Amino acid sequence: MLLAGCTVGPNFVPPPAPRVARFVPPDDPGAASGSWSGDGRTQALSTDAALTRDWWTRFGSRAIDSTVAEALTGSPTLDLAEATLRRSEHALRAGQGIFFPQVDAQASASRQRAWPLRTGQALPASIFNLFTLSATVSYTLDLWGGEQRQVEALAADVDAQRQALAGAYLMLTANVVNTMVARAAYRDEAAATREMIGLLDEQIRLTGAQVTAGAAAYVAVLTLESQRASLEAALPALDQKRAQADDLLALLAGRYPVDWRTPDLSLDGIELPASLPDTAPSSLVRRRPDILQAEAQLHVASAQVGVATAALYPNLTLSASGGFDSVVASKLFAPAGRAWSVGAGLTAPIFHGGTLLNRRRAAQDAYDEADAAYRQVVLSAFSQVADTLRALANDAMALDAQARAMAAARDALKLTQAGYDAGIAGYVQLLVADLQYHQARIAWLQTVAQRLQDTVAFYVALGGGWGDAG
Image: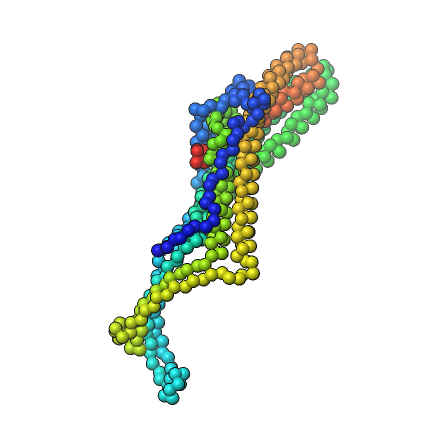
């Protein structure tokens, strides 16, 4: 039982949501428009688009879905976060024990030698057995609410660890999706490079025939072979990046590289989400796990100020005990052996060399630190959303331009190839056209991957559906 008096220290009030009407200035036409088209595909913000915890399913890829499921099942990162949450929950339950009576039992059996001389009587010493059985009950009178504040701090820490777990889920899924997109891009870049190598092989064969017929100089073959070797030299780096992506996915899924197989995936197998969640800026502080975690940590610091404040005041405890003692075990419960006591204890701090006062000041400083950290997390969150909105707008424009460049380079290559076959264009022109098309296609693939990854970043910036408002 807890007898409570007043509760000293500040009562925690969650910080208000920022009074911000939009994430980006209205004079930023690209990001503020909320609709971006590029290469025939449009993305637009919509209030009808739900922000759910399985946001990665919007990319329409079974390979991504299955890989995320593997990671959620086997990730040691999640196991760590879940264990930390359980530890904080058990610490809270342990702290709540202060609200109940503290009952202890003692039993002893001893053989003693007593000297009556201690009582002033010159009697011979006696040797006897002593058996005791007793119970003690103690109560905490939380006159100033220090224990209440301590339990409040433990409960807030549970909230913080719960949000940390949500953040771990969010970052794990985001890392898996980003890595799958990057791996698909490496795969497609390697395929495009091998395709260009195949075209060069055909050109080398045709040019070799022209050299044999005396219609071309051998230097043309050497130049084409040099270009082929340059393209071939790029393949090991792409294969290495893809292997590193496989190893990272194995790590995220809690598997050893030797036991991991990544589902095959190309960029064509990943859909670009057309409808994106349109959320109010004021709701962001209730959506992002990192903001909610920072708020919970601020709550912990606030409660600790109350704990330190209560330590400045007197502490009152009540206790009672009762039991039996006897020199003969069979008579332990005889009425003559009954014993009891009731007491109260008051402890008041008088002089501690400034320790208690400075502990309270330190607790207040810790609150100020947590408050600054909270404001920093909020500012960073709004900055991330603004960055992703601008990135999506720029990605659409860049992809549109890259698509036009690739189409023009492809048409130029076809015309140059036809001219070369007809003997109108030279091998240098064909080589330049090959290079331009290959570079344009690789740039297009990279821009497609970047747009997909920036879409992932947008979902993460909004909290991925894990917050209170998710």
